View (cartoon, rainbow, N blue to C red):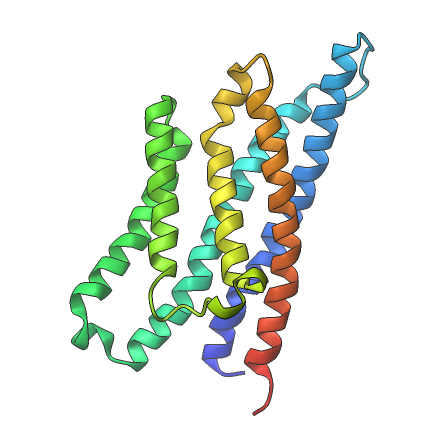
Length: 215
C-alpha cells in the first residue's frame, strides 16, 4: 500500500476505532442518566448508580475532542498533500502560514474551552474553535461536494463537530438551569448530531469507495 493511502486511511480508522465507540458509550450513559433523573423526580428509588451522570459528562468531553480532532485530521491530510503537490509554500506562503496558525489556534481554543468556567470565555473559545474549523474547511484544497451539500461528508462532519463544541460550551448552563431549558436544547441537538454521525458513516464509506476505485 502506498504511503498516501496509509495517511488517507488514518481519518476513517480513528473514527471507527475511537469516535464511534465513544458515541455508543455516550448514548448509553445519557440514557441511563435520564432514566435515573426521571425515576428520582417521581420518587422512585433508582437502581442506576449516580456515577452515570459524571461518566456521561466525561465521555462527552472525550467525544467532542475526538470529533474535532478527527475533523482536523480529515482536512489536514488532503490540504497538506495538495499544498505540497502545488508548491503552495512558494506560491502562497502567507496563506500556508495562516492555515497552519488556524490549525494550532483551533486546537488551543479547544484546550481553553475545556478549562474555561465563565460563560463569556466559554462562548469565546467555542466560537474561535468553530470559526477555525469553518475557515480551514473553506480552503480550496478541501473536497466539500458543494453541489450535493445535503449529502456531503464534509458538511456532516463540520456540523457534528460544531454541535459537539456547543454542547461543551453549555455544560455548566445545563446544570445551573432549574427549568431544564438548556438540557432540552442539549438533548435535541445531540439527537440531530447522532443522525449526522450515521450520515458520516454512510458518506465516508461512499467517498472511500470512489477514492480507491480503479480508474
